[in-house]
Every structure is written in structure tokens, then in C-alpha cells.
Amino acid sequence: MSTRVIRALGALALAACSNLHAQAVSYVMLKEHRFIVELADNDETRTRGLMFRERMGKEHGMLFTFPAEMPLAFWMKNTLIPLDMLFFDKQQRLVSVQQNVPPCKADPCSTYPSAGPAMYVLELNAGQAAKLGVKPGDKLDIHR
Figure 1 (cartoon, one colour):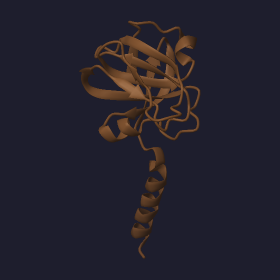
Figure 2 (cartoon, helix red, strand yellow):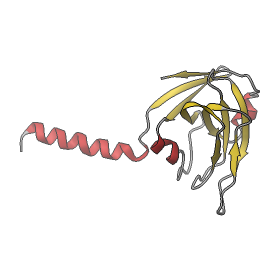
Figure 3 (cartoon, one colour):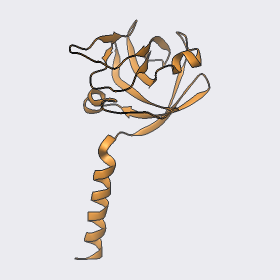
């Protein structure tokens, strides 16, 4: 086998292993605090979200992006860790927060809606929203 083929196979194997939670990584700034976020920007990644994760780093989260502003509601199906859900509008201003949302223990799972139309949802470890003291109108800066 040529060296080129072996390298290609090795690269494919590494790519397959790294795709266990394959989402683009970026960061956001909220209240002068930086969070490393995975991007959920298509139907597949938005549907999967943080399902089956047993933990998330202290300064980490997931940013869900949608093609337009709309009323949004999230659930915690197959999500194992409690979360804060922060809903932002098209201008990246905080619309509302669902704090300390528990994992879903029974079907059907409860839903957690935004208080108004939103285009972005930032999921953080439960307690982060209170720790930051976020309030409606706070600006989220997204760095891609």
C-alpha cells in the first residue's frame, strides 16, 4: 500500500473518531464572560443538541442558530445534565431565560419556550445565568 493511501486511511479513521460530537466550535461573549460553544446550526445538530452528554465544561455551552426569528420552545429529551436556556433575538439581545431546567425523566417531556421570537438559543450549565446576572436586553456577541 502506498504511503498516500495509508495517510488517507489514517485521516479518515481520525475523522470518524472525532465526529462523535462533531459540531463546529466557536465562542460567545455574554456580560464580559467568554464561553466556548458548539454550534447547532442545521436540523441534524439542532435535533441532537446536548443529548446523552454526561457533563459539560464549566466555560462551555451550545449555541443553537435558526434561519429567522420565531417563537421557540426546547425540551430535554435524552439530556442528562440540567441546563440554563437563554433565548436571543435577531439583534442578539436576550429575550428570556429558562433557568435550571432539569433532565426529562418521563415521556412526554416538558417544553421550555422563549417569551418572544428568538433566533439564537444559548445552552449553558444550570446556574450560569444567575451567576452572570443576565437580564432581558443583554447582548450576546457571537464569534465564528
